[in-house]
Image (cartoon, rainbow, N blue to C red; front, side, top):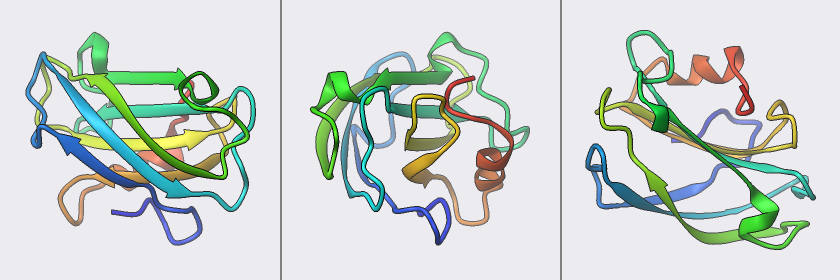
Length: 131
């Protein structure tokens, strides 16, 4: 599901789906950008408790990597596979995937894997990917 109507949406396929707690999943990410991510941009995969909107209580609740290490920058269009460790606890969780600037505050593109009506979209207004 899109993050909102003003931010480009990433297409995401997760394998296996649903993710298995304590294992890894491959996230296939595709998308185009209106403003190209440059050196220092971040890729974040966040696992959020749908009731509290806090990160799940697990060291793997937040996966953040320098996007330009995964692919060359500037990024005009994205088509990558990323292996992400899945939290052992707190699953199932809402999953927020985003590409941001180096500070995690400007979102270039994102998507949310959550049931319709989930409050996970509010999370994006309250947190940054770099916290």
